[in-house]
Amino acid sequence: MSLDLALAFIVSLCITVIAGLVLIPILRRLKAGQTIREDGPVWHNKKQGTPTMGGFMFIAGIAVSCLVVGFREMREGEISHLLVLAFGLIFAAIGFLDDYEKVKKKQNLGLSAKQKFLLQLVVAVAFVLLMRLTGNLTTNLYIPFLNTIVPISEPLYFAFAAFVIVGTVNSVNITDGVDGVATGVSIPVAVFYVLVAAMWGYTALGIFSAALVGGLVAFLIFNFHPARVFMGDTGSLFLGGAVCAMAFAMDMPLILVPLGIVYFIETLSDIIQISYFKLTKGKRVFKMAPLHHHFEMCGWSEYKLFIVFTAVSAVFAVISYFGVLHRYAG
Image (cartoon, rainbow, N blue to C red; front, side, top):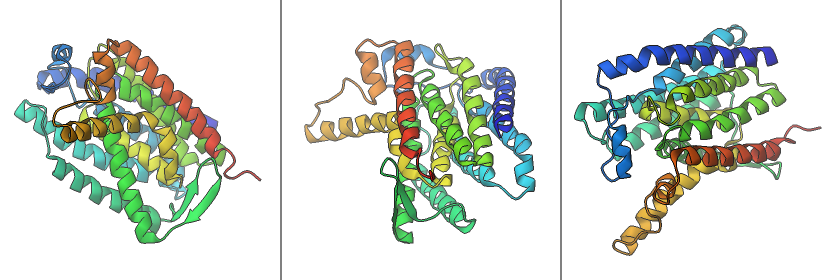
């Protein structure tokens, strides 16, 4: 299994680098540049026109790696990695529609919030249903750290799953606001899944996870500050979908709470800011939301944001690993 994981990492990394070298010049020629939000930090205006939709780079790397390295598992009827990949690809399609609208309109507004929510909700429910029908998911809710299982009804589980998926996917999307941060934060998350898959013998899911690590590491070459390309909603929604799908495929969705702590704190800061602003008729808790912009306004560089946020994600990935370590012990 370790050889498959290493090969999945290498294939994904190489394909992503090649895709980047080919795709970035094409995006520049097509003038598929990012439009910077008007209410964001003023120094972000210099990023105007940086190519977006770069998520296609690591999506290509991950897809090729899953199909090539995971071919043996496919022949043996194990397709869990393909289900996770398909889920991510559908979310990437939603993200692409959003990116396309932004590029076409030359403004930081794509699909409406209602359109995105409904599309994401339908995909979330369809995914959970498919996982249930293929026997890859139960309605027994595993509680990490306590190492116990709580059975819940199917309708309640579907509602819970839809809420978690839509919330997590959008949290990853919100985190993608500073060069390299969403990429850096997600690498420890993906490494966590590799380690758990290896520990529990989930070869196919391990291949997907290792491919995800390889794709993100390669993408960071182009996305680290100063970014030569942004992942766009195409990439961030794929990433959010992949992070979520892996947790459900391993039948432990609650692990997303500690594992995705950075994503959720970013989203919580946005919710707090908006709610407090409305309640107080104009007052703010943070200098700017989400949280990465608050720290920018406090003088943090994008390098420091990347290092601190990635480090926090790595620490919580380790904590999460110990939270599930004894699930199948004995």
